[in-house]
Image 1 (tube, rainbow, N blue to C red):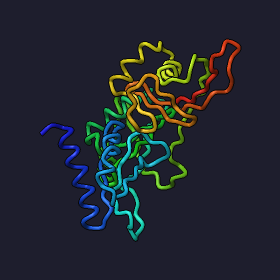
Image 2: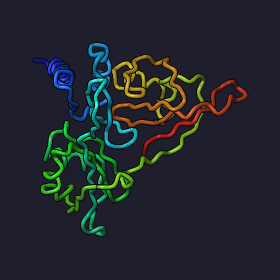
Image 3: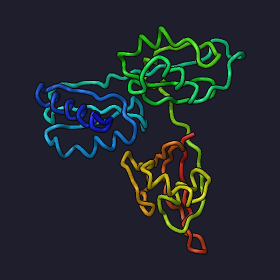
Image 4: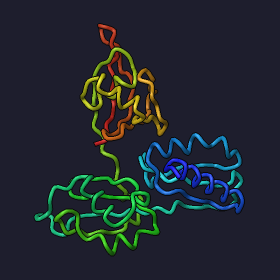
Length: 249
């Protein structure tokens, strides 16, 4: 069975199980493309509510919860947040997102791991809570750095996104123009990303170069990063749009 067919079958099973047993069911952590596929199936299950969360605000990798629209009890996503820091700061390496991801994938499948947020010498990652104890007991090193790993109990201590303000001008507020500004590259070089199904606006796949984002839209480019379109501040004397975006660092 093709991978996409298996994924669709699993999503339908979760939705049907929720309806038949009047319970909440959860998907694994899904990437943007998988989230887009799930969203396209909503009309097939009008009796089921589909909600998403990645454990913190504006997470990219998210888990989908399926529940009947008249559910009578409260529930929580089975997501935990774990913090990684070096045991000895002065002997630690400069570790990247890829380094942390590699260490985690040596222990678990990508489907049980959500976003990884790296800030200075520490990192936070979200995981399915069934994996929490396993990671706490077995994740001891990232590259050559010995680490400490702890569960974050207070949501106030969850990582907050770091945003960098980027300003510039463009002839019109088009998706390709904003992406080229965000990642400091030519507009033509971004065409293959858009037409190749690697660009999402608020989690929805967009394949039109001329799509016009709205203020506050979150634009994600697989392999590049993501940013928030913060709107047009004014028109220049030459009639160009002066725009501002907030790029996730």
